[in-house]
Structure formats: structure tokens, C-alpha cells
Image 1 (cartoon, rainbow, N blue to C red):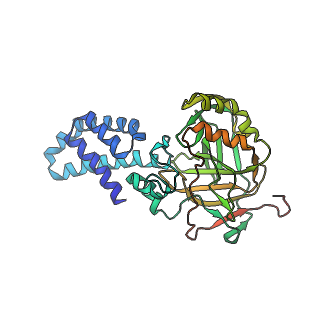
Image 2: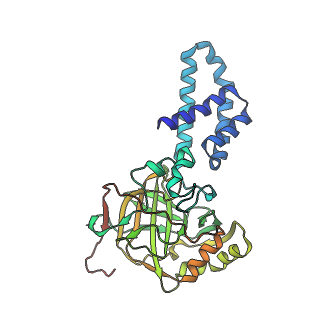
Image 3: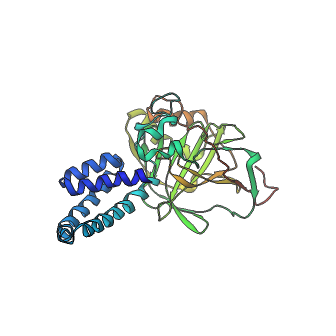
Length: 333
């Protein structure tokens, strides 16, 4: 947290010493290019505040100036920090090669705000080892209220993301609603069950009003075609054939993503890509679904990153509880 405060204080110092446009450029470099538009708006606000409040405060001496700096520092922290819970949309700054300088073991060194990728204690994915799983019946069924919405299929650099432009419905967990924002695929799977990897893993990323994340993960093994991916085949081929970064997918109904089981694993973890933000509620569907080799191949070809995988290695659980919701012992897996 101290390093984060130092970083944000650097931005404040620019506010007092440099012109507005230079402030916005430096803020973008310090806090990440993906936050540039947000910071531009914030710097506008600070610049206006300087004209209105700062110069009269100079007459109050050091106390007034310190008070002014504190207020704007708090505003900056409140504005910027919640955005850290979101995955980066341009993934070219990191890769999945084991010994690469940008590989998973080095993600935490690429940017200061990615440090938790290396030193976090609640990182994802994990191995869902049966010996450490506690069977429970109190969590309740997944309360999903999804609806059709316009979506865009986007190549983020290492994966294909389907992003809904407006609200595509919600997932309710412990009385809190999480809005479905996007879904994307990893191959092979990132989560494992008793050490076993699967051919594919789908992540449905949700976000609450206060910026907290909840992700539903679905595992796939090679077999019959997945109907949801089949509905996106033409769009995926368009991206694969043209090299374009994104294409309009039209109205997509997330209800078409089949789960097929009431059982699921639940644990607290993190985003599996930078910035690896923690305190993410993970729900991994117990039933393993099927997908064809061609569907998995098409997802990789469409990305154009010349890599066969985009899965982060499993992380230490560090004693975290892992629950398996099972409402009926007789229910088939």
C-alpha cells in the first residue's frame, strides 16, 4: 500500500508543478495506459480545483496546502483503485511462456500495480484437490438472471473475449448482485481437479456495483461440440481469417452457455491474468462439459499470438478453504 501511495503522490506532485496536458500523459504512464481516459477526466477535475481552491489556500500556509493535497489524494485513490479489479484488455505486455521475461513467474515485475501476481496469498487458479474440499449444502443454487444483449468478440492478445456492451443480466451471491461483463477462454484449463487438466476453461466475469469481481468457471473435455461456441464459429473464423482485433457479435444470450449441474466449487481467489487482483469469488462448475478439438483450435488460431496455450500455472492455496456445494448426494456428476 505504501508503494501505491507513493505512486499516487507522484501524480499529485505533477499537478502542482506541470501543465495539465503533461500531467495527463505522465499519469497515464505511471498508472497504466488502460486507465488513461479515466485519468484524463480526473486531471481535468484537479486542474479546475487548482484554479478555484489552491491559490486562496496558499494564504493559509502549510496547513491549508496539506489539507488541499490530502483531499485530492483521497479523490485520486477512490477514483483509480477500484479499476484495478478489472482484467487488462490489452494482454500483449505479458505472455505464457515458462522461461520468458514476460512469463507467469515474472508478471509481478512488469508493472508495480501487478506486484500481487508474485506476492499475493490468494492467487488463482488452484488445484481442486478432493482431500482439501469441504462438502456443504448451505451455499444454494447459482442464482443467475441473464438476458440477451449486444456483444463484441475481441482478440485481447492471448485470448478471445466476448464482451457485452450493456447489462447482460446478473449473478447473485450472498445477497449481492454481480453484473455479467464478459467471458473468455483458456486452453488448456487453468483450474485442475486432483491434478488433472482439461482441454478448455470458460470464464464468465461478473462485477458488483462496488467493483468486486465474481467469476464462474466451466471446464471442458474433448467430445461433442459445445453449442455456445458453435453459435460463435462464423465470427471466430472471421477474426481468424482477417487478423482483425474485434468484430461485432450481435445479440448474444448468455443463457446459451450451458452449465448442466447444480454442483460447484467455491473459493476466494484472484484474477488469473494481470493485475491478478485478489478477493475474487470463484465458482467452478463441477460438471465437466464437452468441446471438439476443432473448437479449441479455432479459439487459439483466432488470437494470432503463435502460442498453443494461454493457461496460468496453478497457484498455492495457502490454507484457503475450498467448498463443494452438493444439494443432493444422489445427483449425477
